[in-house]
Image (cartoon, rainbow, N blue to C red; front, side, top):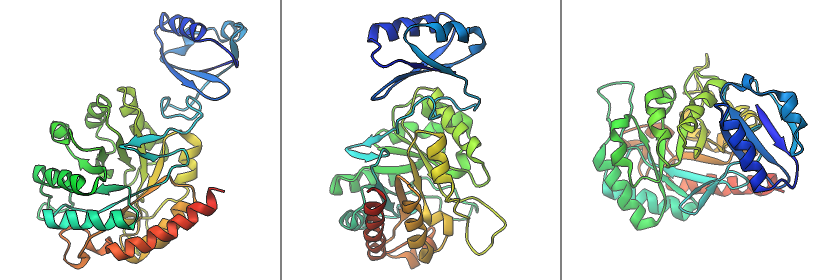
Amino acid sequence: MVTVLKHGVTDEQIENLCKWFKTRGLDVHISKGHYQTIIGLIGDTKKIDTELLESLEIVETVKIISEPFKNANRKFHPDDTVIDVDGVKIGGGNFALIAGPCSVESEEQIIEVAEKVKAAGAHILRGGAFKPRTSPYDFQGLKEEGIKLLIKAKKVTGLPIITEIMNANHLDLFADVDIIQVGARNMQNFDLLKELGKTNKPILLKRGHANDLKEFLMSAEYIMAGGNERIILCERGIRTFEKYTRNTLDISAVPMLHELSHLPVVVDPSHSGGMARLVKPLSLSAAAAGADGLMIEVHNDPSHALCDGAQSLTPEQFKEVADKVKKIIEVTSK
């Protein structure tokens, strides 16, 4: 249930109404916009007499929300959420480029890539330390050492860093990581999501291989229900019957997620197509569709990468994509 208050209500009136809701066992979520204040109610709202509520002088209207995701719902929070990561803003008209290798392989590699993607226009450095792989015989990442190398690259370049977590027991290792990524395989690892809800770090949540948008937003809801509302949604392609590409980029997810939710939406064109030559057209499509950012794999030597070299761009190719994306953003933002 959402209670929309009239323009001009005082903080004291809002506080008193919230206290009244809480005495009825409800949690409240307050969203203050330019022209109105919205109070979202979470819990058993059957205890509330809607006619009585609408009769209050400060209440404009009362709306029933049928969707199971509440905190992530745009009806609860009409204005776009903007995630600020060390001065880099994502959402609400702010576009961010996230770039770096699939896996951190060495100090020399990650620092070289970091310097080159920053020069090409990247705002955030990505790099895998813990790598979930389909085969147990594939490279699994440098783990704790990989995080240490990412932190070194941040000190050299000043770029905020993002890397993937696989186990809640590793949270202490992520103390100096700016954004924690939840991969597609862990989108419904609810125990992990609950633990991330207790943190205050931005979380980039990737959509699962075969999950619909409702399930995707419900996973975000798990994190937000724990108190952490700093969520970035990532569309990375879904598994379909198509075999020519690694996954199928659901470009319609970008405007649909923006309609359903206030959370920023970024797109991963690297995992979507699975081929370096598809990254540019998919990136341009995502930018034109209104994405709030892109997450692109970049390697200094893709042919010898230990992980996902086929879909990785060289720094020079990334610069070409970044330059073209900027032009798309300039046109669509007018």
